[in-house]
Image (cartoon, rainbow, N blue to C red; front, side, top):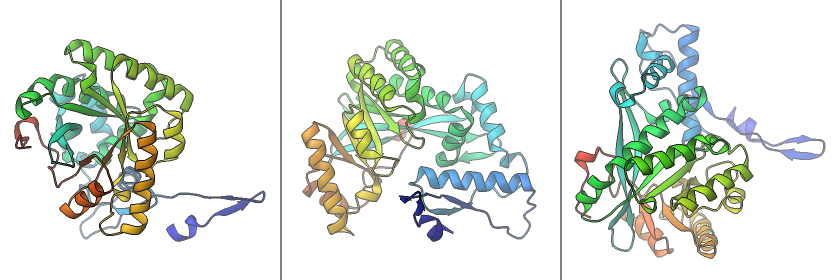
Length: 324
């Protein structure tokens, strides 16, 4: 199915490409799969594919029972409806972003985590995409934004110097006033220097209106907040967005940073992006760095910053490593 649907269609003499993401569910001994449960599992797996780059297939590996554990949309809505996500099991973990020349931590990315009292730990790929689909993602974004701004003082203590904090927001929020209001409120509430905050645009949804998004980004930057494009190279039209939206930082998707295993193709792509960003005055962060070889290869290409499990997995504030 994937191979067939990847073939372009000729419509009115033009070649039109179609993308597909597949969530696969296979029954196992003891499974009591109702039609509703089957669809929910397939849906969760499909949205996990879309967050990881689209165009692939993922097999569902979540909760296997047919109890309320499986009714994640209902559990998520309940967790976010009470006004206190933390009380419903939401937390924020932080992952270091380092300077590749010496490995020093220059920033952290704030990432939502959710452990539901009923379902237990829920993978971010599942609950974030489910929140986007059901219109609940703003509540998660704003919770992480507020917590990250509140934690900057403690982060400075841990690392011995001020640390920038990256906060993800859904691309779908770039069409309305809610994001700007939330950023202004969080900065004022925690008396945070705007220069310490980076808003990362995560492109799991298409940016609905590029001119409108560009205007919002300009207003955020006028406050002193910087803006990043996350997972650059895996989204809908990365170069068009780079042209239309005045961002400060580009985070290269891990599918583009495998220069250690695919030096010719990946290296050429990375060099091109790095050259474009250098011309535009944009800082580049390489994502998905898990080995010294890959980090060294990206540094050799001139990439200034990196992020990945080589430098630390996302962790609660109390477990951050301050050695760098």
